Image (cartoon, rainbow, N blue to C red; front, side, top):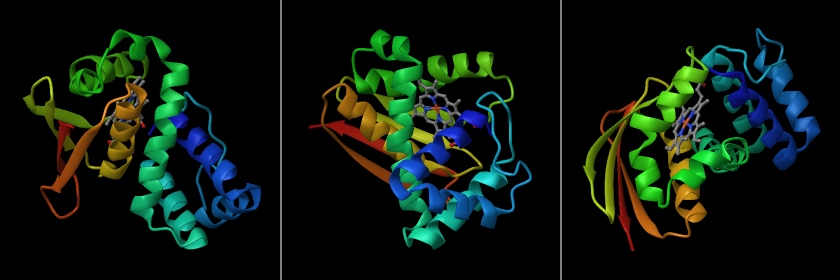
Length: 179
Ligand code: HEM
């Protein structure tokens, strides 16, 4: 997992829960990296899992809700760092339909070792998008937060339904319908 996912996660923890919680979870997580990340480095996904598990214990917020909050937070990081991509698209549905064939293609070029999800566009229309999320990291709540903020970014409203297609959430169907 790329360092930017860690550096921004730690930033969010500090902002939302304070420096003491941040230090506490880094210590409890027993990290190989010792919690020292650079944005372009690559670190084990297991470190993210430990950080989230410990943050969950510390805050009494379940891990899925924390991942969701992080998706919302991370979207704003993306709009700051990759403003051009968001200017290129004129609607949320168009952008989300383009993650696999455009956005993450560029990410792969920038960071060949990025561990990205695979999004299969099952149905695409001007008011509807059905996307199947595939990733062994099962970060579907992170994806949901990103999608919700994408809609807000373009000033659009839609209902998003999420259907887990297997028990561990490595395959999830998202259906967005504009309202
Ligand atoms: C400018 C737009 C975007 C950029 C630059 C970008 C970049 C990235 C990067 C760098 C990672 C981490 C890869 C790693 O850890 O190795 C990532 C992961 C991810 N991205 Fe994107 N992304 C963008 C937009 C989106 C959007 C709109 C979604 C909407 C669902 C999305 C869904 C995800 C998910 C769910 C992951 C977590 C990894 C996983 O589930 O396996 N991304 N992205």
